[in-house]
Image (cartoon, rainbow, N blue to C red; front, side, top):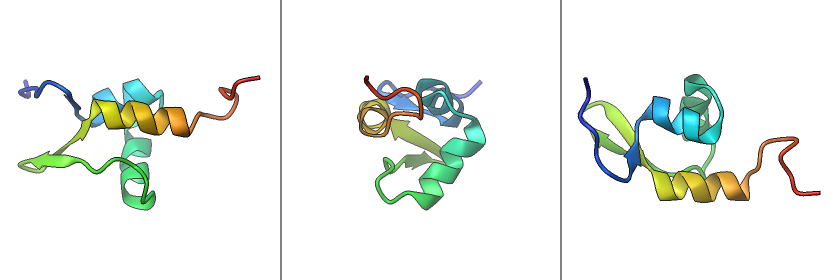
Length: 67
């Protein structure tokens, strides 16, 4: 079991938080300049949850926009 760092999410947790797949998290990380930059613990990327939440708020999923 991986150790957790409070305030940070691994790829699986980030995917759950953003309501996307794990692969989509990695795709966003490599293709979007405005996606939060992870820190690395060994080879494991960890994203700050506050920045993930702020990014999601600024980029709502299709169909999630306010009416």
